[in-house]
Image 1 (tube, rainbow, N blue to C red):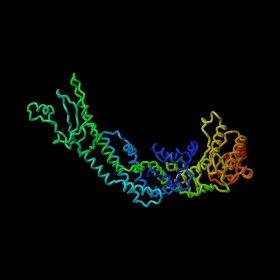
Image 2: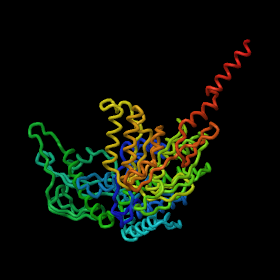
Image 3: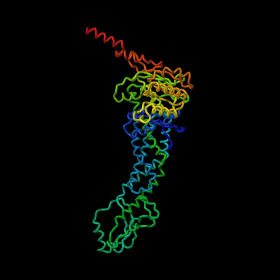
Image 4: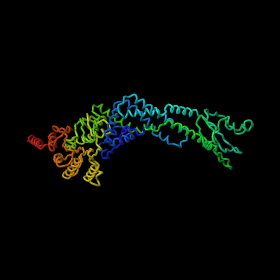
Length: 568
């Protein structure tokens, strides 16, 4: 159970690559986290899972099937949500196993309550998993593990011992102390005589103390306390003391130092030490009794908290999106070596989240394939025509699919990528030292140092801030490099000339990722946000827009000539 995970099957080598900080920012991961939960603790847990990219087909399928169960059964999410809250209170429980210094009885009782809650958690999740027709291998294995813990950890005996210990603790009402005095009636040493299940009354202690001076019959002869209780001195050499069954041991009483001049009486300190000592021995004995029941592997449930939270929060969000009529699908995962992707009616998840939050955005869906005929797309179109939205949509779909989460599309077939690399415009503050062109070129160099033929590259208006000739020169080489590596990519740009060169690049550059031109659709001057395979439109886009708003030369001239006619 210690190594069990809901993210990685037992046969997995748990390999992954970490999403870069730039990709985290460009894919708006923080926006997704804000939509998933308000808890900072949960955001950090989910972020860690989402930024560790695995391309292992078995692992992704394992996660995808588990997510299916979370999505299929709201009652499972409800029960596990409550369990997560309870487990959060038990994260310190392992310290109990390692804590050898705790001596106070209240600390022991507190730990017993935690263990009692742990037993209850195991019982609860066992009952929940047995009552639901779960399908995934991961959840079935979790059910098997929990059942083994329940049956193999002596829970019945443990529960009985905990209840008995609580009962004994509740019955402990007083402690009887024995004190030796010197000739001046000053305390020399002290020990515990007994632990009692009743409180002492409230007679005047001094009156009872002085009564023995009025009659010798009240003074006991010798120090035999066998008819009272076995004597339990503080600091014994060895002891096996537990509540309710006391055994006598070697005598090493607490020695009390008194001031010969003032007659100062440190009795209180001595008694405190004596009581603390016997409670310490009591605590240690009960802890050793409990250890034989507690299987440390059972605490692996606590280690599953981040994974459970991850699946619950994503299932809740997917439910909200599908409730609005937007498709979310379980992607089919194929071998990474095929470097293939096919999305039907893909859209940007951020837009769907905004609608969940109350917006009313008309979301356009698109079809796109990454295959032997076109793996690298040069995407052109007008400003605010949907190029960035589409580019980001593809990246988010890849990220979610490899996390095992349903993706924003009607259907999808995906060869996993080994990582997603992004190159979006940087903040102005990040370009001070190198300048804009130098900063962009440096980031591109870092990407190509890490990218492989299994990587996915998303470039958004890269190199657009320099002059056209310089930007086009570098962009042309960047596209050639992507073809040579064999990566999949979307490069959205205003460089229509770059898109016109796709045939030339394919013919003259070695590689097996074919470059294709894609455009965002415009119909009668209206942005449709649809993407299609086509040569760049260039001036025709601008002419459509100009005509729509009446700013072509002919329209302006006709308008001015008309004004002249009216004035005359």
